[in-house]
Length: 216
Image 1 (tube, one colour):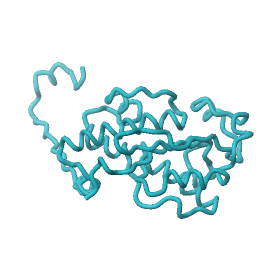
Image 2: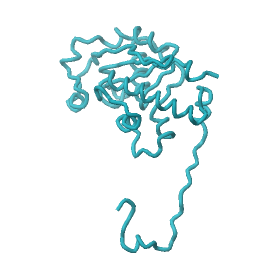
Image 3: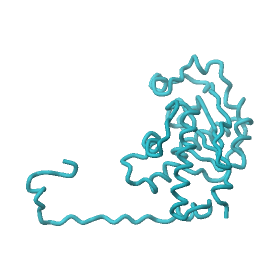
Image 4: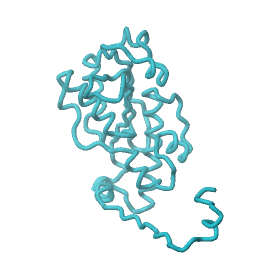
């Protein structure tokens, strides 16, 4: 049993040139925030020269331009330092498959395929189970739910810091449900959720007769 209080987490966020590392998109910025012993501390942050142009739509979203990354290190130059921060910690991200996939590709190219180990923990997945009442579970919505201010949206460090605070809120909610260790969390995540669907009556309701639908 590994209680949350003794867990070592590293919350990671990457900014990229696009959405598919399989089609050649690359990392333009990475940040890692450490969550341990109830503390949230910056662990690593750097712009990254992706070795390819950044599309204008990405620059509009993130504010990261070709000029900003022209003098930044290549990923291979920062791989060892970033790997040290990630090592022996549970990797966490909001939409973890995205960040994990991009970093896995970058570490592979840098000759460090061993840098990512274990299974990532996704705060989107946790939010879908714990915060099903929210209309959306993107970082903006979940951060708002926990009263977390995002200092710099769509920048790696700002998003990683916000995700770290969201993680703390999610873990506290889990503990209230009796899920207080990583072993219990994996069991809870593996449990199938059965949602009951209320059958609509074939008979019209008064509101239906008036043509009023849900949310009218």
